[in-house]
Amino acid sequence: MRAVLALAALTLAALPAAALAAPSPGACAAEIKRQSEQGESSVETGCWRLGPVTLGMTTAEVAALIGPPDHETAGPTVNLPAKVDRTGYRNAFYVFPRDLAKQLERKPPKELRTRILKVAYFQDRAVQIASAPPTETSSNRCGRMRGLAVTDGDAKGFGPFRSFAGVREGDSVVALEARLGKNDTHNRSGDVFDYWPVPLTLGVDVEHSTVSSFAIGADEDALHLGGWAEVSLTRDPKTCRITGFSFVEKEPGRR
Image (cartoon, rainbow, N blue to C red; front, side, top):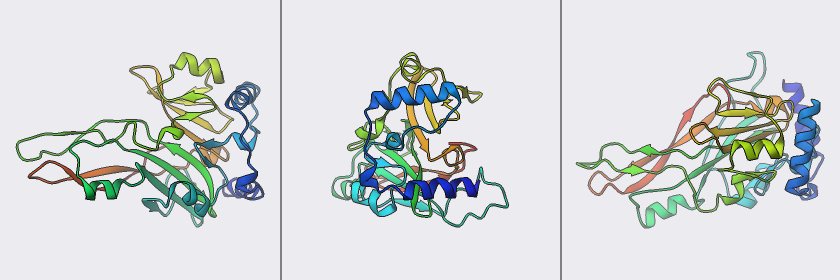
């Protein structure tokens, strides 16, 4: 796997970020559909972006677009064989809105909408970009109140990351398959669609049969690098207002 990722990173490194001109969403969708149906995975490099962030970008290039990460881990600890050296892998998490800490300091709210973008780097090149699906999390008991904190949703600034190849969060599975074709596989619970061998997975809201998130990788191994972190909110026990946040690291089998 390390050899595969190293090759992917070197290939992406050979293309300056500015040179990765983005084809139209329609052209990317058509290419993904064709290659998935034919068992190929050489979709044009310029298609592999969520919002302005493109596979192959360095940490500095991503920071120039959306700022530095809010949380980092040494790298994936699952989905890598024991013999693989983890040196060079790093997971970075970006919280939206990007000025969340300043917002909470300036005016602590009772409810909050945030989203998380994950970028996994190998030798300082982005090899995986993924979003977390919207969720609702109840806060801990706050005095006599039990407030509801919306910890994911339509966070300010996250709009560009809510679509890929013309598929948007909230689109029906029917619309998704019309655009990208039938998904090749999905997990047992049916909340993840996979377009193998094209390195693309989509999270699905099973209850509503709609798209909820995206993950793209430099190759299949990069796509399934594990490691995730969620936002944990801190509340003032007297006012129930949100005063800060931290990260809780998760280790899903596949993300």
